[in-house]
Image: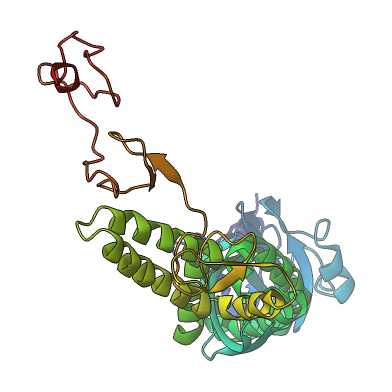
Amino acid sequence: MGIWDKVKSEALNQFIEVIEWLDDSKDTILYRFPVEGQEIKNGAQLIVRESQAAVFVYEGQAADVFGPGKYTIDGGNTPILSKLGAWKYGFNSPFKSEVYFVNTKQFTDMKWGTSNPIMLRDDDFGIVRLRAFGAYSMRVADPSTFIKEVAGTNSHFETEDIDTQLKRSIVTEFSDAIGEMKIPALDLAAQYKEIGEAIREKINVDFSGYGLEVTKFYVENVSLPKEVEEAMDKRASMGALGDAQKYAQFQAADAMRDAAQNEGGGAGLGAGLGAGFAVGNQMVNAFGGAQQGGQQQSGQSGAASVACPNCGKPNLQDAKFCAECGGKMEIVRVPCVKCGAQLREGAKFCSECGSSQEKEKCAKCQAELAAGTKFCAECGTKTEDAEG
């Protein structure tokens, strides 16, 4: 080998380069490989790793895009560069080109949120103001478009460089989607997944112009103003309460039970009924029962009426409780345990003989005795009636 052949061989060996990029960050989208003088030698080795793409830019124009793999740069596998004239001096000569590595992995946990409330017309609460936030994942779908439309001549491009622009686009599409879907404020929490999918489709129309794609979109929370949340809490309380009319009857029945247990007898019963029914009427009025009560009163004039056994006021024939005093319309009679006289149910003493209406008990085994029993049905002990 002659001396010139040796020099030529060593020169060609110096032309061999390895073009690769090892990313040690989590948010770098684009990196321009530092080629000295922008000269790439023929026979250079290009190594593109998974989740990467290498883009050759020649004289400001995006040329070839290489996916994952190992390549030897020559005229055979760079047809676009050949067409552009990079090889006009022959394959043994260097050519000037820039190499950009684009990170095509998914960039996860990208945050979004509404900086100002979004106005929404709701059927239940009228005009409400919504705030929302969440997260999304994106990736570079078209490296050439991304370099042309976003990165430009930047040698290093990170997610934060485009984060603000993407958030604006997301909030705009979120406002548009939430308005079109017309989801009631009460049902928003149950529709987060559907809202996220609808917004993702809209966003990808915008993002495609940047060479980007949103792969996941999450709505983590949609918050309402404090006064709307309080109204929702009140509505939930009303739902848990149920039928207000039945609640009023339940209150009156409780008052009757408590009054019957008092020592005051009939007076205590009347006072307890009045208090219980007053509370019940307040609940009915609070939840709209007053209107129903008015309709019932207006209908009494034309229907058969029955006088209340307690206060004498007329009531509907099928009424169970008096609308005036809350007394029970139906009188249940029970016989006296001593003389058999008919007494009001719950009476403690007989109005005829004055006997206590509490059932007698066996002196030996304390078993309850029926009226007129002479011997205990449990132990056979002779009762006071038999002795008398």
